[in-house]
Amino acid sequence: MDDQITISLRSDHALVLFEWLASRDERDPSSAHPAEQRVLWDLEAQLETKLPMLFDADYAQQLDRARHAIGR
Image 1 (cartoon, rainbow, N blue to C red):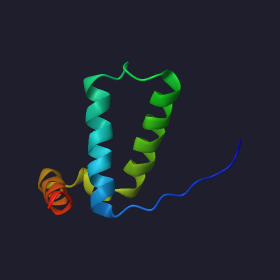
Image 2 (image 1 turned 90 degrees about the vertical axis):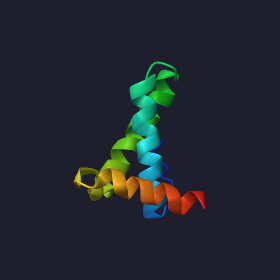
Image 3 (image 1 turned 60 degrees about the horizontal axis):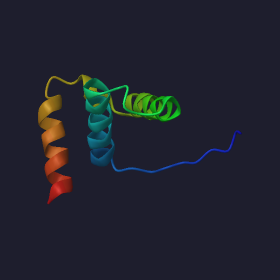
Image 4 (image 1 turned 120 degrees about the vertical axis):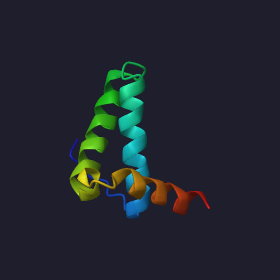
């Protein structure tokens, strides 16, 4: 099945989602069904390619700002 679905996210949402996916994977990678885990890893990898700030020295501050902006 080659159907593609495109989802558009604001960068702050993408950053928070990436962090959640990465931290979830670190906490308990075995809790998901193997197919679900594959999808989550693929989504995390796709987000990583779109978020150059992941490697910035002030990443934690950028993540805090994004969380704050969303959580208002």
